[in-house]
Length: 87
Image (cartoon, rainbow, N blue to C red; front, side, top):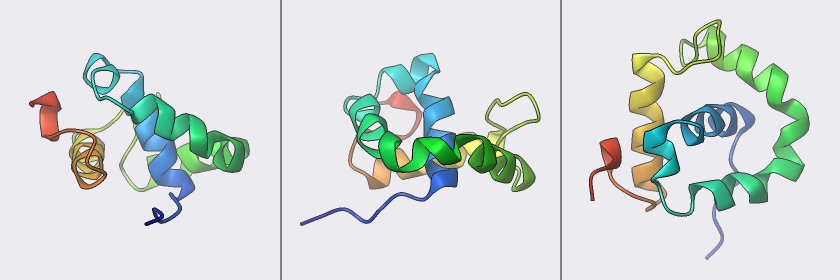
């Protein structure tokens, strides 16, 4: 079974999350982002701007509370771990 393609805004938010201590503890997240990078990396700046407009990222590029909740839920849906890094 193939996974649906990730959209650029989700990738940008997960990329920021992967840079956090919590995100670094999620097994397979870095590999997933690396696989999607060739397709989505060129859209990174536009995706981050869109994520900011949607309230997922702050103007400084950090996750908002809404963004953190969204990426935790997405990580869980992907089967990479449970919300908040709990196992």
